[in-house]
Length: 355
Ligand code: UD1
Ligand code: UDP
Picture (tube, rainbow, N blue to C red):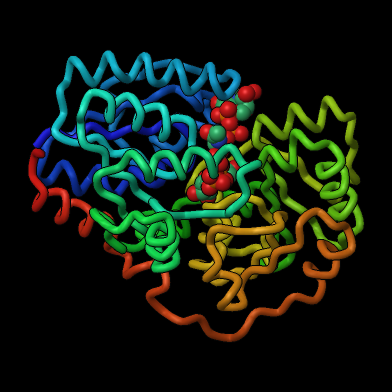
């Protein structure tokens, strides 16, 4: 079969890595990069770290408003779809690349498989929630990371083509954490002592476009008494500059880091503070307590199991959680699959054949 795989934003490179490998063992993969992320540290470094093959096409859409970016992704991916005529299109997650490509494929009657289907925050103010809901409506095959996602889909009347396979990002964390431990020198480079620093990421529109929320997060970080490593997403960098937010010296605002360095920074942090979906799960996989700078999460198992806590952007709640939040000593296994999600996806796709 010919499978056309869409990537565009940082988490999608991680989600694509092992699946791409599994596809290529039995099928032909055409890897299409929409160009949504393009800076070296948001893009190229992931292809290097994940040993991901160079894309067959780069649509070069770049940044823009939601409509413009999604529209360009539709227009440019349609051209590739018409030329390549794949049997399946794979999209993942909840980005504008996901929705744009899913729309273009569906209208050409090319079947779509959605990886990480069924995740819901139930917050329509999140652009990602719109992308997920619509991608799930369009998809022929829906690969869920958790049983919660399967239930979410059932509540929307989507039961056909749904498979709970586990989280492809768990597969990636299992594969790459030992490689990161062997290869990454980031702790030495930043002169960090394991367990003696906090790691922060924030890039959600609710925390960047809303300057008050960004101010509150930074004001909470200012009050913490440990070194804070904060690899800053370009969107957040721009928001900090525009809002003229200055932070205290114990907060180290650094460029985004590559995947292997990130895994190592996560693994040795005393606590992680984040609004990222991927980082919340990686914290759980690596056994690091996570403080989530949001009011809700799609990854409710991490909360139920006591390894993640939602604090929104309330300064006292953030500070309090960092200082006092103590997770249990154990974690149930299998919540996010068994580390073989990619193989399961390919097995199911293979059984479906070309439609
Ligand atoms: C996107 C996804 C989000 C995902 C995130 C991962 C959507 C709607 N959002 O958000 O779900 O969590 O990626 O990181 O698709 N920029 C650069 N260089 C880059 C990329 C972006 O400078 O390489 C800047 C641009 O100013 C751009 C802004 O960051 O306007 C936002 O980028 P964009 O891809 O639109 O959204 P993200 O916030 O990255
Ligand atoms: N990540 C990284 N370097 C960074 C920040 C994040 O390698 O500086 C990785 C992180 O480990 C995870 C993925 O990028 O694998 C998550 O991407 P992001 O937080 O941008 O998006 P989300 O998961 O929220 O959609």
